[in-house]
Every structure is written in C-alpha cells, then in structure tokens.
Amino acid sequence: LARLEAIALATRYSELKGMVGDELVDQLRKHKLLGKKGFTVTQPNREAYFLQLQTLLLEADPAANDLADGDSGITGRGIRKKSAGGGGKRKKKKKGVIYYMDYEWTEEEEDDFEVSAIVGKVVADGKATYANQGKAKVGTVLYRVVWKDFPPDLVWYEPEDNLG
Image (cartoon, rainbow, N blue to C red; front, side):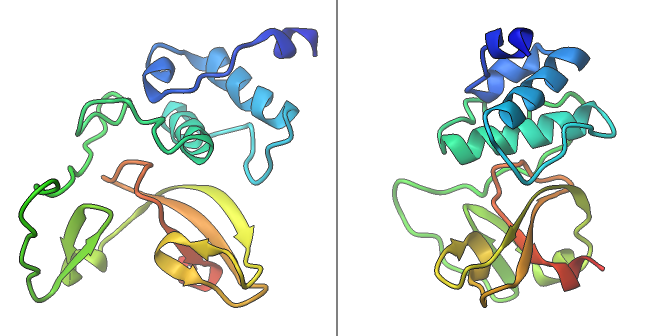
C-alpha cells in the first residue's frame, strides 16, 4: 500500500508512452486506491491498459491528450484522424456523412464499427448528458466505448442493448 501511495499518477498521454507492464498496472491500481470506479485493474493486453488509462486521464482533464494528431500513444495502432477544419471556414455537410467531435464517417462505415475496449459504465440519472447519447432515461445502463481505429478521446456511450 505504501508503495502505491508513493507512485505519481500520469496526467498526460505522453507520460504513458514510456511505461511498461507493471508501471501501467500500478497506475490503474493507484486510480482504484484514490476511489475511481467503473473499471477493472486487470486488462487483457498492453493496448487495453493504455486505453483504460487514457480514458481516466481524459475524464480528469480534457487536455490530457498532448500527443500529435494521429498518434494514439499505442505503437502499431492505426487511428482515424480528425477531419480537416477548425478555426475558419465552416465545412459544408455532406448527405450520408456523420460528423461528431471533428471526426466524420459514412453511414455505411458506421455499420462496421468494432469495439476496441469498453472502458467505463454509468447508470443514467436522467439529468447528466452523456456525449453522443445526450440525456438518457433514468436507469439506462451506458457503456463508455472506444472504437477500433478511433482514439480514446472520441467520447462515445452505447446502451447495453446495442453491444449485444
């Protein structure tokens, strides 16, 4: 316990990049020790540890992702990049294209999305807003999903029924 208390928590994605196995586990254990809920310390692989930690960092600080665009911090993981734009002319929306958080995809692509990791769970209180779901009905179980080929800062919740 004293060893975990002495560990400094990472606050930025870039700090996670140099960490290996036990260091990643200790980061999750420290979050548990500090009372964070909704995740498990044991993860199936290094990518899942990164995704879970990145999600925790993002919840604590929306500016936690200090990596270059397209860099997921996870070696070998192809990440969809944000659409061009911002800071100027508004892009004309195309029919059949979905736009969300500066990302875009077609309706056909949406049917092929794969879950990379489930990194959180909430039960809606009817008051809070949950990213893409808006205000969900009281008691609705929503899972925080990281989609394959998208970075963990694409905040997305799915109802239990949609994850089958």
